[in-house]
Image (cartoon, rainbow, N blue to C red; front, side, top):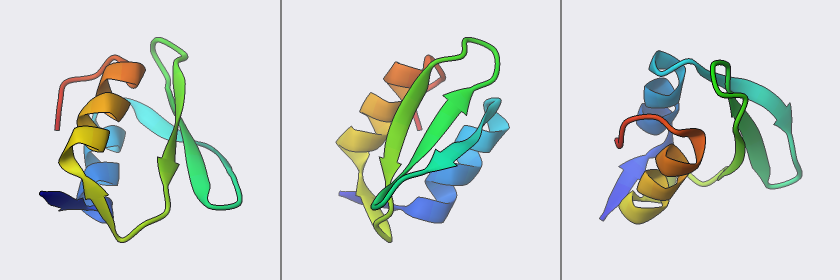
Length: 63
């Protein structure tokens, strides 16, 4: 099952995460409270398991 990238990015922003920098094929997001960073691929659809893993790495609620 997949999730639209824009919906997932809005979930990150609602949970105090912001774009830290851009990579070649991914973006680095950082939690402004915990300072944890992780990469988010630039695909139009993201796997639900990947979204859960990203949320866990940023220490925010699951999507």
